[in-house]
Image (cartoon, rainbow, N blue to C red; front, top):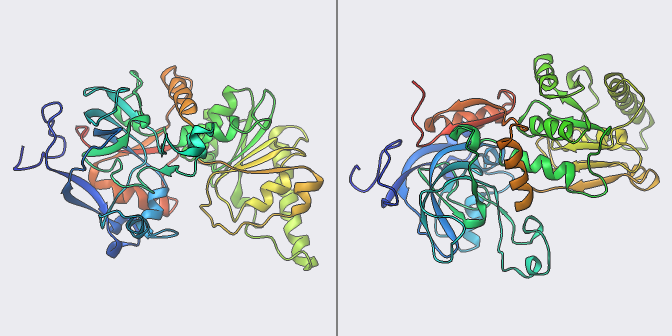
Length: 409
């Protein structure tokens, strides 16, 4: 132990909590490109309150939400929390990870010091009126994304979580693998099975945007496991081949098309004709890959502005476009005629409930779901990893960084 803190990778006696810890910190004055926004600092270890757990972090997953945190856009996460009364003038991100329970607060009985856990991403008030009336926690007005909308996430030696976020670590997975799939996996699972009656059933064609990314790689496997026929959209053939290896029927290279973006004004006949031509060509490619003229029953979306018009056009009658993000922008256009005349569904989906998290963990533990960990970095690579996401230069699948896990030799 060095004065009041431990060095990264230095394993303190079980349950001994230092006064300070290393964390990868974002501050408002550094908002901008992620590689410059994140800096390693020594900060106070947070106090553990009622129903809370302090976890000694072994590894942390990398997700796009902390690209937004680094940019300070679309939400200034520090200012937003300070408006709600938070004292900290910094943000410690990280919305998933794996580690060891190090301390528990009053009222915690579900985990004990020494337990090896993986951490889910959603937090909510279990005593909130809507939860007591039967809402899933992830649909509560109190639901927040841990490590994005809340502080003291997984990018630190110690993370502060609610006890409901702690789940048993699959014994067959490494710390790094365990840290990498519990945001993308449950998010995809809820999108594909959580919105009755539009759930993936045997034989259903499923279109998956960003098929080689973290969310897409999970969705391909889940759709295939349920008997669906996943078809991925990717940015190059190498990523497409990776999707086929995961179980996709085939892939569409989006760079072969140029009609992306917001819908033109319907009164502009030429612009609408050009857009429709592009959307129809994309649909024809979908038929070609599927091997028959059927539309996707479910379209798994997260890109938003550039792709929603095509997704709604292509989706089957009474099918569903289900979206969990907007990485290409938030001002998406929908031709409302498709919604009412073809009875299509545009469904928002935000993370997952606790039961779904456990189901995804079991799939991973049973070897059915590969975490698809394709890149692992060190603690000092947290900014770099988010920069790769920001520039769309990240590898396929999921990414993780080691926190207290020793670096590979």
